[in-house]
Length: 154
Image (cartoon, rainbow, N blue to C red; front, side, top):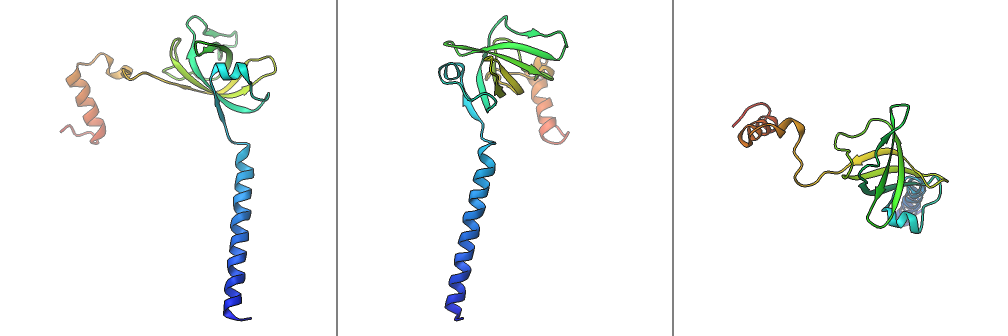
C-alpha cells in the first residue's frame, strides 16, 4: 500500500473513533442532564415522574416543618405564581431559612411532591458570615486579610 493510502486509512479510522467516542459520551450524559424548573413551569408542564431535575424558588414563610424522624423536612417553594411542596432528608445548609432562595435537586413524585436529594441555599448580596457579624469593619477586614495571606496580616 502506498503511503498516501495509509494516511487516508489512518484518517478514516481516527474519524470513526472520534465519532464513536462522541456518540458514547452523549449517550452516557443524556441521563445525567438536569433541567431547571421554577414552580410555575413545573405546574404548567411537569417533568416525567422520576426524572432528575432542579427546582428553584423561594421558601415560603411558615412552610418549613420538621417531620417526626428529625432529619426529614418539608417546605413549600414558590415563585409568586405557583407553589410546589418539597421534602428533603438530610442536613440542611447553614443558609437555608424561610424566605430565602433555594435550588433543590431531585425528582418529582407521582403525588406532585418534589423529593430533593440535595439543597443549595442562596443568599443575597448583603450576606455576612456568622463569624464576622459581631465584629467591627476593621476587625473583619483583618480576619479576611489573615485568611487570604496565609496567616500574615499586611
